[in-house]
Amino acid sequence: MTLISSHLFPFSAVNRRSPATSTTTTTTTDLFSCNKPTTTNNTVKFLYSPSLHRCIRLDERFVTRFIVPANAQDLIYNAGATVGVLGGAYALVSAFDDLTRKNILNQKTGPYIIWIAFSCFLANFQDSNSPDARYFAAFVPLVNFLRLLVNGFSLVSDQGLIKSVTRQGDPKELLRGPLYYVGILILCAVVFWRNSPIGVVSLAMMCGGDGVADIIGRRYGSMKIPYNQSKSWAGSIAMLIFGFLVSIGMLYYYSFLGHVQFDWGDIVPKVAFIAFVATVVESLPITEVVDDNISVPLVTMAMAFFTLSNNF
Image 1 (cartoon, rainbow, N blue to C red):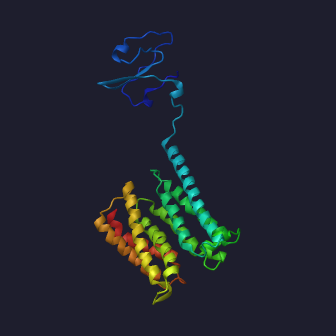
Image 2 (cartoon, rainbow, N blue to C red):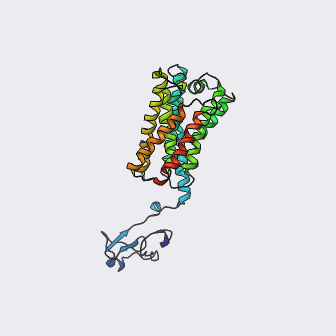
Image 3 (cartoon, rainbow, N blue to C red):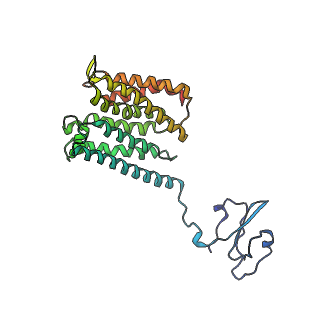
């Protein structure tokens, strides 16, 4: 058996074997008692503490021949997590695309947007301490960003994607709101990662707020907002409620994982205020000037920065 240097084992003493010709039990067995006699040519004895002794038999087939460096372990873990999340996200998106081809879903962007954001959330939950993990997480929405680009420029034609995301069925619509939306997901993953509630609240207001508002507004939005006839009271109320609930839920989850800690009595009313401001901005008739997939998250980020900076 190859001689193993003691720096590979966190023990206080390592007794190396005697020459191979020796097959008799030595007096060391008196000091390190085992259940059965041991020989010095195939036994390595470890002293754990003055009061605890143990003999451990080593065989080459049980000895690790290759030790993976910590940075390589992080790389393998992050790559594996990204592939898993990407596969799950693609499966969900494909399911929604298939539903639109069958006219079960038609021009309803809410479910699609929610799951795209959800896939980004999953990527952010990678249990990795590597500083590069955020870039692996951002790769998930980046793939969808590229998918929107190639379809928006009509390099390929995915009718399921076009019907589920666009309102008029024009592929060029993919290069506006949906593309801005995924770009914000990438920004939140890279800039804020999981250490700041700013990115969490911004994503929550987009997926849990704006996404649900679209669904509720289309179905129950008969009463329009006076200053913007394209928006409804039902949609705005849904955005306020669900945006707030998803924000609190995601912050609680991050807190549960130990990434951030909050004084909940202080942060809950602040998140409610941020949700209210984001809802007002989403209801304004400024869509022709700036898309709400840009205005809502940017305003949310600004408000979260000024109101939550003291909470983390």
